[in-house]
Length: 61
Image (cartoon, rainbow, N blue to C red; front, top):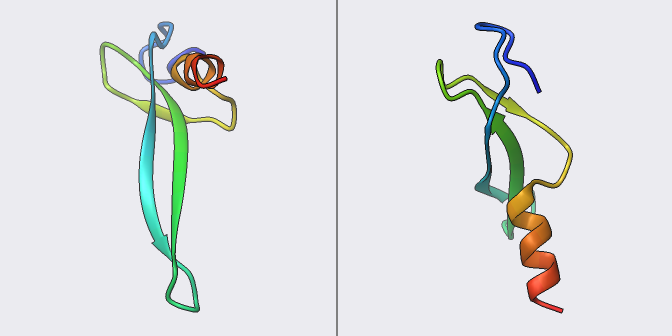
């Protein structure tokens, strides 16, 4: 992906984990994969699996 502020390639990928409460009071864990620019630290959240999640999937099987 290309950063929209500095027009360079985003090279850092990661996942942000969050906790969300449902209406019935139970907790739900969410994950948001993102790409981050190394220069300006701009984050673009994506729907795609990142490199860490692919490696984790193959090592657990």
